[in-house]
Amino acid sequence: MAALIEVLEGGLGATVQDAGRPGHRRIGVALSGALDPLWLACANALAGNAAGAAALELRLAGPRLRVARGRLRVALAGNAECKVRRAVSQGLTFHAWQSLTLKEGDELAIGAVRGGIAYLAFAGGIVTTPLLGSRATHLRACMGGVEGRAIAAGDRLPLGDTDPRGPERRQAAFLHESGPIRLLAGPQDDHFTPATLRALVEAEFTVSRDADRMGLRLDGPPLAHDAQHGDEIVSDGVAPGAIQVPPDGRPIVLAADCQTVGGYPKIATVIRADLPRLGHQLPGNRLRFVFVTRDEAVAALRAQQARLGAWIGNIAPHAPAGDIDEAALYSENLISGALYAEEP
Amino acid sequence: MARLLPLGDAAWTVEFGDAIDPALHARVMGFARALDAAALPGVIEAVPTFRSCTVHFDPLADGADTLGVRLLEIAAFAPAAALAGRRWRIPVLFGDEAGPDLADMAAHCGRSERDVAETMTACVFRVYMLGFMPGFPYMGGLPDTLAMPRLATPRKAVPARSLAVTGTLCAVYPFASPGGWRLLGRTPVELFDARLASPALFAPGDEVMWQAVDAAEFARIETEDAAGRLDRAQFLVAAEAPWPR
Image 1: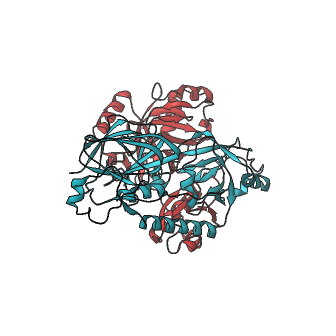
Image 2 (image 1 turned 90 degrees about the horizontal axis):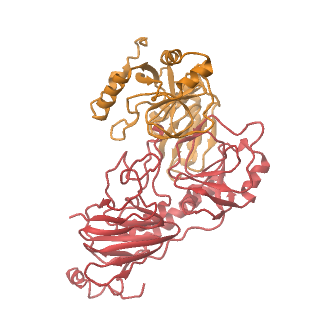
Image 3 (image 1 turned 60 degrees about the vertical axis):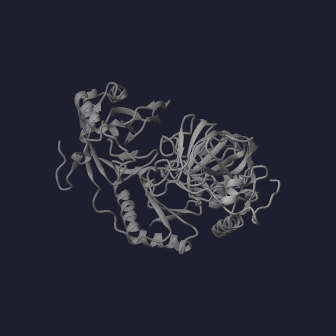
């Protein structure tokens, strides 16, 4: 029987996300989906799911959850303090980047989320009702996830039917690239002076308090528009990563929940390979940008996909120390060889 | 000539001009139709706007490196869309609580509220694009005589289904949201329902006329729609028929 999760405390800003809702931007429906699809894929792989299965995207403070029914396997990609309170034995710390199987009545408490966002995946995936082909939550449009909002106490999250047996799985943390965020100029780079384009890559910007799933407003030197073109355009298409510059010159980097069209000139666009790490930025973080070529952007994305594939391919079986379910081990005939006890 | 503008490494914007104009938009819609028919590999979706069409694609798909050239070829040969899309006549309750800015607009234009509402129901509006929120139609066709700028201070909460105008544009807010356009009325018809096979009432290229209704008729249609019994097809006007006046 498929497992069920009860939300005891919602945390702050935890939403159901998957690979997003493409195909409906023509009718004004945002792409949405995980800000960091790489870490979503990592958490899902550790839990035994396909890369884009629906999971919880955690921000700020994580939720407290209870297994209301069944057994389930969970995995966390990210940096957060987690504790498990077993219904029938002593509690233990739940480590990121490895799976753990919970039983009915067990509680999982995720504390402060460090480094922006983290993903909590469950074997079978969260199977709330899909809307337009996706379970991703879009807060502004009240769409997807649990009633279009962040999860809250009392919610129940149904999981897909799965058989959580076999050894637990783990991997080293998947690290993002460092260095400046890479950009392609355009689509409206000709609305800015050469000096403004230089300022974009020479200055340091700070993520302001206006930072959410729709976009990040940056503080830094104001980016002046070219006098000839002005500071507004007749609206055209936008995409996550586009850097639009409103009349006040303070750039906004659009994110997964951004609108589908916009009326501010877009000086440049963050390349796909750097969108995941952009998703982790918090107010106060400092950012630098650098222009790259289209070939470099595509090569970076290809290399990143290869690195993710290798990471998933190298996930290893693992026995959490001090939490051996002997009955399950005997039943699966694993106690003879495949286990190794090692401090996590 | 269309221009090819990069929107990062996973989208191209094919730009046909920089104005809000039916002839320019017909070229955009003609391109969008030709692109849909071409079914190019790696293309995820195309988003037509007033003056351009943004094509989102997978940069790792086969042929992605030459997609821009293909798009310009299609733009060069695609005929402008000869016909508009569907034609709608949608009920609206004007003024009072449903349209709190109607009185202001009438005063600004030196006309009566009734006169402004009658002008609104005499215009044919063209849906240029959907954006801002699911199903939000950007429509052109408001006469210059009714043009007013946005509110200096946007409302924190515009009620769902409010009919709103700014400049020569007209729209309906499908959901409650902050907004700075001027509210003239409200329609009882839902503009977006994600449970339907075709969730948005309008599509780019559609034409819309408003039909004034009273509060009782508004309430009747609203109740019917909320109960899932409203057939949207009743608001369609046949392509060859004259607009009802």
